[in-house]
Each structure stands twice: as structure tokens, then as C-alpha cells.
Image (cartoon, rainbow, N blue to C red; front, side, top):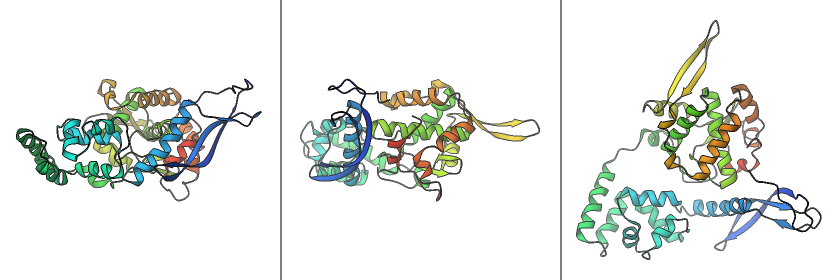
Length: 332
């Protein structure tokens, strides 16, 4: 996706380079894989806009993860859970009147404000803040307290009970696992590619890792294991079974004469896919993965996945593949 860049000094095509470098953000140092172009004749370095974005994202995501600072969509989700405006959230948390909205748009909170927002996601902790906020009208207070009461009674999704909770980090692509996003990716590839299960696992891997490569975060927050047949989502059978039970897609066992079952094949209607929960960049990646692998056989996509450094480095111990390996992704 990164186009070749020509040197402004010589007009010749420059070398695409990647190397470890240390960057500072808010007086803290972080190690990243720095992407840049090198002019072979002059030794000058240049960053494309896309490279600049991924270099910056690597630093910012590490900072957020280190200090448990929520990402923008998590900040918005907390607000919406309680049916509040950004202004009201700012009032309750003691921020400047427009501050919560700025955090939703991508501004990075201070560590203390990040902790406050994280605490607000817990209805028990948030209830105390609402009770002591003098800037809310009494009617507004009672309304949000009713929402909090509902949240306190909610039973965790079975997925949340069976799959270990993880804060954003390099193992989940700096995104907490998001079940609706996972389900909709499966719907999308079921409708567009109609793959067998083994191929579906690879499509999910390439979608998540390609988005991380170019934009600094995964799409679903899935963990991926390196097994003999290539990268697969951790707990994939459990996740497929739960999703299928919600009538989101079909899985059909395919038989060949005299050969027994050949595998399980996915299908779905594209109108079941909720594109509104994805960004334009994420939808572009899904389209790119589809175009790249739609006609690729299951055996061939397994072979392609075996070329990837993330799989090679972790298959011996069947370990989780860190998303940092996405920066060396070969086939997308």
C-alpha cells in the first residue's frame, strides 16, 4: 500500500527501509520499528505520510497501553453506555467543558485523566462520581443513575467469561477483543469469499495484521496462535460456535464422495454485515484482503502464511504471534 517515493534531489526511486529506533513522547522513551525512505545518492531520509502515521501510531499506542489510557472508541463507548453527552461526561469527571469530546477525537488524555475515564467505565465507580457531581441537574442525575443501575445488573457475555481479559498491547494489536467486530469480519468473508474454516482463519489473520501494518492497530483485538497449519485466532472454534448460534452466518460440512468430510464451509448474506462499526481504512483493508485471496485455494493460503515472519518465529512453541510481526508482513 506504500507507493514508491522518488528523491527530490536526484529524481531516482529511493530505498524503502525499516530499522529499530527510539522515540520520546511526554518525556518517556519508546522503541519502534521506524519506516522511511533513503536516498541512496545523498543519504537523506524521508517519510511518506503513511509512514509518518504508522511511526507515530507505534509510539502513541505504546504510551496508551503502558498507562492504561483508553483509546478513542473506548472513550466514546463509555459515554454512550450511560446515555450521556461529552459535555456531561466532562462535568462529571471534572474536565474542561470540551475536553471529553477532544479525547474522543484522538487527543491523548493525561495519565490522571486517562485513569478517570477508565474508572468511569466501571458502573460501581462511576456511580460515586455522579452522586457527588454538583453540575448535573437532579433530573439528569436520576436519569444516569438509572442507566448505571442497569449496567450493574448486566451479566458478562459468555465470550468475556471464557476468553481472558487483556488490556491493549502488542499481543492484541492495541485493541481489546471486540466480539461484534470479529463476528462482522466473519460475516464479510463468508459472504465475499465463501471460504473453508482453515482459509477463514488466514483471512482474519491477514485482515488484522495488514491493518496493524498500515495503521498501527488491529481490527478485532484477536490473539493469533502459530500452529502447524499457519496462524489461527486463539479460541477460534469457541468463537465460531458462539457467533453461529446467533444466526449471523452458516457453516456447512462439505463431503466428497468416497473421501469423507472435506471441511466446514462458511456462507452469509452481505446485507447481514454491519459496515458502520468499521472505519474507511478498515473497510479498505477488508476489500484488499478479499481481492488478494478470494481465488487462492486453502492449501495455497496456508503456504503463503508460512512465509510470514510472525508464523516462522512462533510455530515451534505454538506461541501467540505479536502484532509487531505485522510490520514485516510479506503478502499484503
